[in-house]
Length: 118
Image 1 (tube, rainbow, N blue to C red):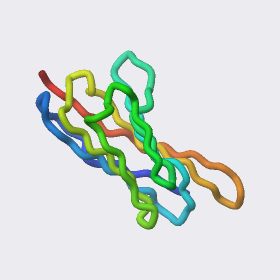
Image 2 (cartoon, helix red, strand yellow; image 1 turned 180 degrees about the vertical axis):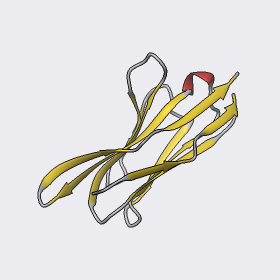
Image 3 (tube, helix red, strand yellow; image 1 turned 90 degrees about the vertical axis):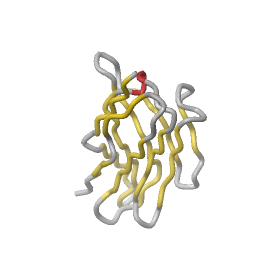
Image 4 (spheres, one colour; image 1 turned 45 degrees about the vertical axis):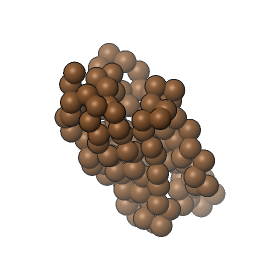
C-alpha cells in the first residue's frame, strides 16, 4: 500500500518562509501531485497542483508566493512558501493521483500544521 509522508510544517511569523515536503512510499506511477489546506471551520481547498509534465496551477491567494515542485524518480513533491500571511494558517495535505494496472488511485498525506502569527 502506498503511503504519503509529509514534513516541514511549523510556526512562523508573517513574512516568513516554510517548505513542505511529501514522499510517496512504494513503486507507483504518479500523475498529478498537489497540496491542499484546511483552516479551522473551513473546507479543504486546493493550494497548488503540478502535473507529471510539470504544468503548475495555483490558488489566486498564493500566486507569486508559493512554488510547487516535484521529482518523478523519488515520487516527491514540495511546496515552498514565502511571504507567509496569517491567513495561510491551516493543516496542509499532500495529495497524489496514480495509475496502477490501468486503474486510477488517489492518496492523501496525514497533514502537517502551518501556523503563521501576525
